[in-house]
Length: 272
Image (tube, rainbow, N blue to C red; front, top):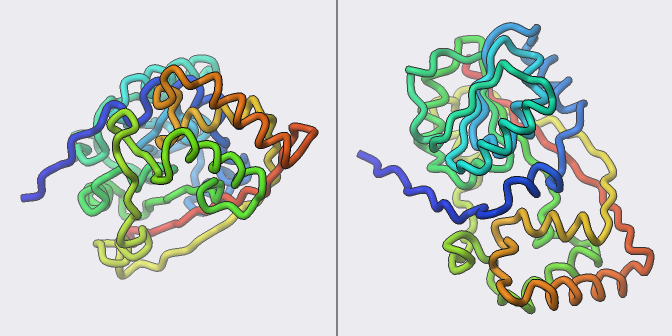
């Protein structure tokens, strides 16, 4: 029997409100594509796992009769409820629990989505549970964006990571209030999916690209939502870190305005 992982409640400690404000939103074309692929017509049910503050569940909720959104972080769930209220969406049930704990008591779903969160989960277990909950005509979609600053070739993003490393060390931190170290995801998601109950099904990838603009303030807000540079990691050094970051970014781009092309990818996996 597999032992389910214990969720680290510090993984995004203090970041929920900023996450909703500064994390890149998925463009409307992405949701239109999902609607087209699965012939969604405001019927059926959606299950969104690792929902965070509702970046998928809320914009997709008007395409379904009912939405169940799951996240283990209580602050993320509370922020999601607040965002849903602002958006006037009242057909979403928010559950504070790990994705590994979903079961048949939730009922059947036409679509299951996971955004930038699958790597935090016990993926084999989650794939098994998803397969069991999908209707025969349903599917599973991984949504991702290619904005990882640790892998970016953009000079201003490289400058930002250089300053993060200056204050937090060379290794990429994750969890445990900054004491955890990030390890690569192995095997890649697509390999794991190919080994799952979905293996005999074709995996299709769709991409939507768009230009994203940042200021020093908004990019700082973004960094404080990441598991590698939460604001709490800097302790009493918040002000000097921010001053260093501002100086480094302005040296690259004196206007203080930055752009990048972001690609959102959809990995669509059919049950049948």
